[in-house]
Amino acid sequence: MIAKFSKKTGGVYPINVFKQFPKDALDIPDDLYADFKSAKIEGFDVSDGKVVAKVSEPQKTSDPAQTQIDELEFSITPRRLREAVLTESGAKWLSEVDAKIQALRAKLG
Image 1: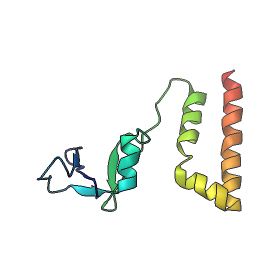
Image 2: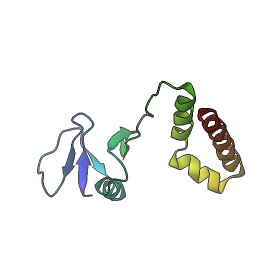
Image 3: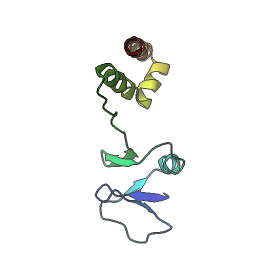
Image 4: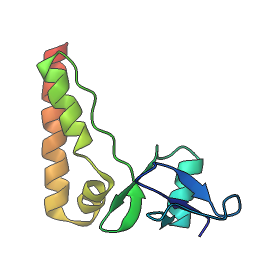
């Protein structure tokens, strides 16, 4: 363990720097902390009592087609990509989402 995360404060606490931590601070998995340090993820959240990568909400635009594209792209999570590689149903889902995105992009011009 390299660091802890507190959802209450939003703080990241490297253990070699801090001696005391907020009461709600949880251990950050080393690989997740490395992703944070290399800017592969933008922050942390807590889910089921564990520190996980923070997921950003898609930005809203005034164009309905662009909003739909953003929502579809946001739905393609690492878990969904893994399912697309490993299962036939996941591959079909990803292909359908991609076709929807392409159709909406055509509408945008």
